[in-house]
Length: 110
Length: 120
Image 1 (tube, rainbow over the protein chains, first blue to last red):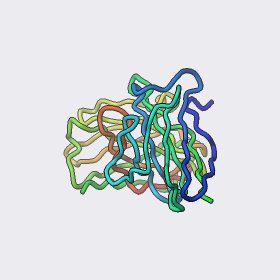
Image 2: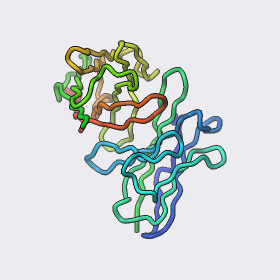
Image 3: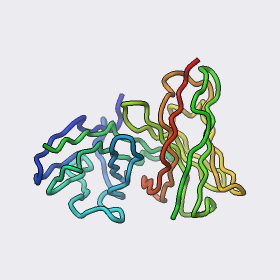
């Protein structure tokens, strides 16, 4: 039972644009869920990319952007590069102090 | 620069209690701007939010782990700790500690992670 949903995998061509989404099994994601996005490469700790829906963390290239698209949070990568190939996780604030990660999206750049 | 470092046994027997400590350096754990949290990742699987603690000792836990979980803070030692009781093989994971920026979901600094295996 995955409460927070993400695409299990996605593929993008080098230089292309891809949008990953983060939804709820029931209901819509809004800014009140404070959606954030993390990038993780094998063997490494996750790294924050986007917080509070659309704020870019320090040092994160502006190729990464966050938004709400329809009823989901979204992470868009423009001009994808080979080293963007990673796992991407969203994290939502569900209320009453509880946070929940999405299942993650494995992004392939080829 | 803020650093977090997990420490604790790498092997725990089933039904026993998993204990980890996260030492914070380069900054004070007694800040009203941050919570301090634990996240885990079973081998080959996704991230799971475990829980967080404020420097006052206030906590928030994952509902699925709440009955077995204790997270505490020791401001005199600038560290916080995780205890998970009655462990099974399903608790085998890399356990990360991290700093949570209030409000919301921003874990902006992470430890390197500690692998804990539950096995007899």
